[in-house]
Length: 446
Image (cartoon, rainbow, N blue to C red; front, side, top):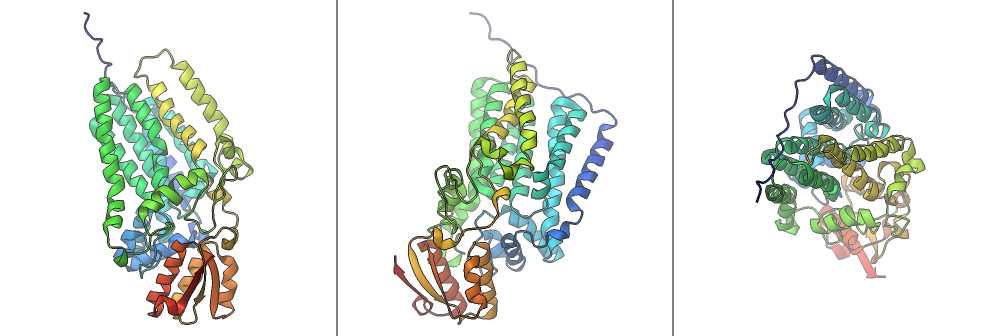
């Protein structure tokens, strides 16, 4: 029996040209100007998350849980990692538009730098600069990195994860593979299952291209899976084990459980349109949920066309060309590995990720999709601060139609919603007014 074929020689990166670092500095400086110029014009941006940042600046408990308010009545409908960054910034520099939005813009600059570094390693400084500039100038990226939704931190962390995978594949490095898993786990704490959309490309690239035996590749990936679960799940475990009576209600869930949020509204609900945690309801079928339908053709809709779709045809054509050119190349070929990494990210995300920014164009009345209970709230007993909090909640949850009742000074609010939302409002009034729920909220089955 002949000897087994030798493993491929590990990758050795050539030195960068002398002009590469000055060119990178120019690119990052230009990106910073683009993302930071006139940043205050966005005001509070997404006021829902801005309110959570303000709460986190006043209460460490609110910061940890991602609470909407400093009294820790309810969390926002996302895990809190992005709020941790903005909350710490607000504690250092005060609560204002710049302290909330500047970290997002700086994350954008960092993302451009990390993408440059990832492309540079295999294809040189020119390719790295083109990739970084393309990202910086993409309209949807400019919008995303000048806003306080969790997407800025999510994209930064996924890009860092991709860079770590590039380093891992070069020499079959267990350390870099585990770093990538840990970073994607932190991205999970930013926007839950959306962070995992890059994993198919990551895993397939490593299985195909890492210069080591297949048995070792599988062993390394199982170790990375353990790191991913720990880095993703520690906050979830803390919330689930914390006594429900001494922590805020999990916003977006139906039963005050972060697991319901994970597998429902913030998980598979975004893929199927069955977004039970959203008070504005979900569509289902071809209509999609609150954030629009899924599918590759959605990326070419009128909402997305001017933001990113103009890049997609070229990206898809080049993806196919890279795969075709590298078909006969050795297993560890970097061109094919790059096609799997970046092309896998593109294709999987385009197929399953629903609309977000582009579809936020007004929300239907909550009662059009509500079920469960109809109940009346007497808010005349609320102190002014809690009344303002209620108005804020109603506005950002899409219940604009009911704000007139509050502003006109009427004494009660008639709302239809799910039992989970009813539990939340019951808690709001219990803690704000110090009365039994029956004195404030009267409900009956519908």
